[in-house]
Length: 218
Image 1 (cartoon, helix red, strand yellow):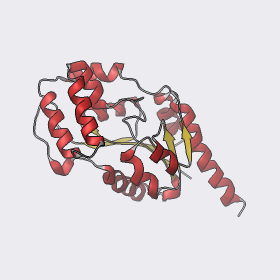
Image 2 (cartoon, helix red, strand yellow; image 1 turned 120 degrees about the vertical axis):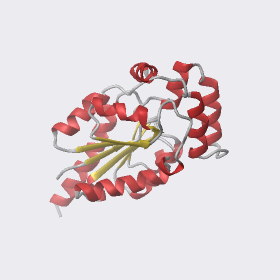
Image 3 (tube, helix red, strand yellow; image 1 turned 60 degrees about the vertical axis):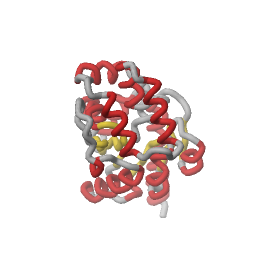
Image 4 (tube, one colour; image 1 turned 180 degrees about the vertical axis):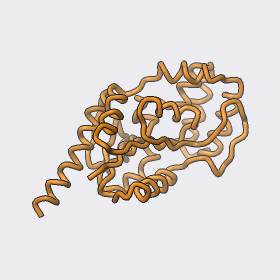
């Protein structure tokens, strides 16, 4: 039996941070993006407006800026090892993030099997609303991936931390909260607080192993 591991990025693979915050830190717009993220969290702006505001800040950014911010971002320990272990087992990993594609796609070089993100172009202020991911998008993408890989929901493990993961955690049976907020902690089948993704991943594997033992024993 193969397994699909679905990872949120902001706050899950990135410790207590987001792609937008890390790029803003590099470009000198940290306080503005903090304001945008607070407004988003409080429901004052939606995902589309958030990206429109941020794109105006990235208009002069270069690939070198993104790469530099990505390299020093506070990634969870063991991230590459986890992605490598999933691939070595013949399983599948996918990162589904509301963050910009020009950031998230860099995780492919670290071993992510596939990435799914808001499609925006670095240096452009234009935002195609149809390509902005939302919390609902995570459910739609997970369902599509399951169909493409011929896997059931019981052959998936989702890892997430916050509001954007609530819908996905509500439909999948195996979920791991990684430094999660109270809403995600309540929904998750397992939870981890800490700096090492390998521990959270072990919890996810444990959920699947428990299911396999239950099936084997009738």
